[in-house]
Image (cartoon, rainbow, N blue to C red):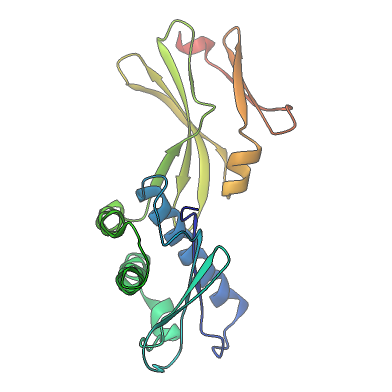
Length: 223
């Protein structure tokens, strides 16, 4: 089992509004996307797949680990997590703070379990550079048959929103057109609605998981 989930839980004694919870989940969700995007595939975290980080509103002693099944819980007991201060930080500063906690947890876990510590450290460095926007090319992206036009379907992930967009490029990699296919998208949309694609003439059809046509792109005017 390789690590495939990284989550954060707010302090359980912290009473917050639905809007504040949404903002917390939004930034921690982006953090997970950021880290997993910058980790290579098949990274070992002691054989666990689900890495859960539990925060506390007041320092309670030493950090500790609880492992069960495929899950490893890291309790940040030495950290006095102030939710009000955290939620007021800029998105960039929130990410930097979470990366600091993440690095600390990795260091402690490495003392007890065999992990790919160097890969995690390199990932953290890349994540600091990546910042607040991630782009992932979806597998439905395709060249036209003469290879003079490329249709890239891109998942753009930011703390405030996820978007699926189309970019048309020529054989010199010059941008011909760009437009949004989906706003307020999710990782599930990217998987379910963009399952495969095929050409019919100058039209690229994108199919969902039920093999229904979800979206079409006609490149005729760009040839």
